[in-house]
Image 1 (tube, each protein chain N blue to C red):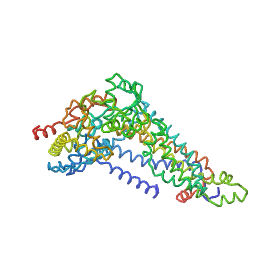
Image 2 (cartoon, rainbow over the protein chains, first blue to last red):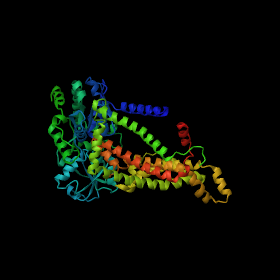
Image 3 (cartoon, each protein chain N blue to C red):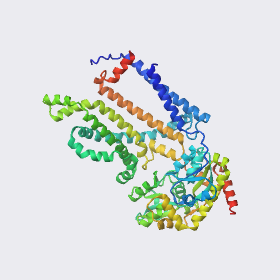
Image 4 (cartoon, chains in turn brown, green):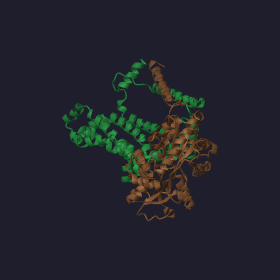
Length: 327
Length: 278
């Protein structure tokens, strides 16, 4: 080995060490509770808490980060950049089933997802979708209730329809508009917007098959919860207050959603989507409903195992928060 | 070739190639050892980076079940088609851009406007224009490959030695003959380099391409695995893309070695290698 070989090897090893150093081992302890949320109707309690400075009022040093995708929220939580987050229950279950050390500690919203078709499609009921193409995001909260609804209607999701997988809500809407697919699993306020624009028709909400099914949940890293149980309880007290405020002030809540989502939706339209009895902002939940969703995910091959209830959820923080608020 | 650089005997050549492979393997082995050990001892969280043995085990499982082969075949087909179409457009148009200012005047502005757009930016239009399935995926690979290759070919064409063409024209060749018999042969080394870069780009576009309503493909497999937090599957997909890219590049290198056999012993690289050996 000559000097050039040695230099090349040293450079290569240095690159490997730098690369390895980029992957975190143990998260750095932060005095601030970092909470990752997405732009979605039922993440509005966090927008309310942020806008109205409810965390500071509770004596909690917390920062809300609006993050582009559910997956990125979990990835940031895994890295230790976030300690708490909100994402669809399916995302949280998938992460926990793969070993992410976190627990679901509260709900943020129920319902809100359903099937959209073109207004001129002639599709009137779920059974009319036999042999049709349905756009969905595999493994998501748009996907699992869709498969369950198809099953309930006597349609095999793998045989009687063609599920077409996308990564973005907007791409699914484009595909539906242009006739590339016959239906698309979607959420609010996009479905109400499509119906209001005249081209879309809301075929059904999945709540027809599973009333009040869980949509998005709040979760927290295990190590953070163990080290700072009081902070988790405070954060959930804020969450409860924000949920109650959202349900009591639909117009202001709709305006906040529009502000945080940064999209060109009209406030009355978002308010309409909120006022539908097919979705509601909520904080309370039971371990059974989370386990039921995990079992469905396992049945459809989306997770390898169903985690035990105590691996998935910890209701103790929410119970304490509720007790302290005399709920 | 009278370059003053002595050619290797075949035995020397084999020995050199062997040593080069050994050096490459040293780094790969170092990565492999660190990858196995660091997650196991907890320096790296195994949720973020599973140990290499677990990833290889998962890869073997996917390979034996045929799942990996299905995904790889789907991606390979799309890459080959998208890449071939891109080369069919980029190479002749790049040569024309490099040779004729009139063509450059018409095309360059549009080319520079389109070139910075990343492949995912084309997804909504790809769905609208080509529907769902293979056509938009192939389009995205094409669009992600064609502009950069075209610019590279044009730049290489501009660098073709003027005196070579002048000699041909003086000897009575017309412009077409000068292009056919002088410019293109002179361009071949750079052309192969651009084609190899284009092939790398095509593989880099696979993930974006397979975000669009496909059920098979390594990009789809990685996107799906990411959303379900199957980091080992993501890594298996990355390894498969790397391996296929390496294999296709190796094929191109063999073709390059045959087509450009005349270049042997004429490059500065060989001169430096010979100097070091002494």
